[in-house]
Image 1 (tube, rainbow, N blue to C red):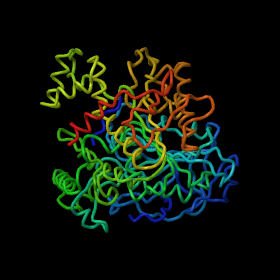
Image 2 (image 1 turned 180 degrees about the vertical axis):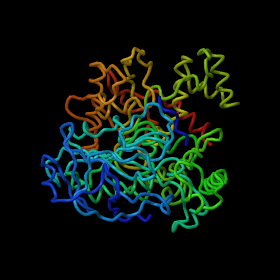
Image 3 (image 1 turned 120 degrees about the vertical axis):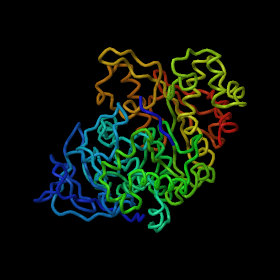
Image 4 (image 1 turned 180 degrees about the horizontal axis):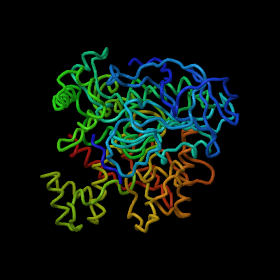
Length: 532
């Protein structure tokens, strides 16, 4: 189970040919014959790529979408990169971005780890360029501290077989992707710093706008999606003036930047960046940029752990995401979003090792809410174990996702589809029992059709049936902005009254069905009491 997420110069960006990268370097000779060839090729703005046939579709891996953010470009907006000559091989994943080994569930197929990591991957079923297929751009999760577009659970081949051009994107993480600093703000034409990982995602979307037709995709039919930090990223890109005009739809799985903890301000984040530099004995920006990447990375670990993350910088995010969505200033596109039934564990409320007793629950509520503990118990009524689990899930990620769904439904004028995912993973092949609920991140393999990419679990036919149905809903939404289709239980959209109405909730699991939401009191409590 993944750990909790703790809360430009953007002209058309040209891909980069990076000299000396053997796995993805440029070659020579005549260009191949196109997407329909045995060795598929695609002609991008920057040059020709040669991919591979894989899993019944064409795959192009390790495509650079911006210059390597190294040296003077460390903590800069992603920059345009020169074109290459000849034919660039795109048969292997490029390096993942700098990150600590924080998450035990991450499996990488990347070519090592490097600060030079701004690459993306494309899977396409198209027989020719300009086929006009819908496009999915997926942002990985990992708390904005970890993750990579090479992870098997995000593999795009299964979605490509549904008639979709699928893209995964690497973006800078942690200190490299989100550190602000007074000197960085001073040198910026926007007088802002931080949020470089979000700038990378926006740059990738501009690359998609300029180049995806070469892979058979429609640049005007791009749906962005992601889970956990990837879902936070989707909510950010919808809110950001850098990207909101580049997308036609959005999918968010467990997470949004509208949660209980407001994002830090630029000023506070600049101070944190300066303190981080001082801790590394780098008193100036020049000294910070001169540090080896592994020194910067190691500096984020240890007893005083640093977790640089999203901020309200005044540029990528001009003001708080909640204010942007309330004013209807976000991308006004269809949204499909929700979360899982066991995002958090009851022990987060009851205390580690505590039995689910009323006494333990009351003690936990008193610790968290003080004189509002009685109101919390009223909102989270009934069985203690379930109530504590639901409160933990909402505090972690559920409420922020609900608030995003509700705000977008109220202000966008677009259809919003809300889900609640309930299918737990099965027993492992090594004999560990099935989980008791749908924990954080477990839906990814199901909705993207990638169960077989995770050999840890003994997938059953029931799991495969859930996956086929969930993937069908997601694929339909990517294609049309509506998840409904032949043979699927009807999924109603929320009305303009938002999620608070209690209508339009789709349970996704062994028995998928639309139900009346029963969690209105939960979110009313957080809106009225728990928000700062």
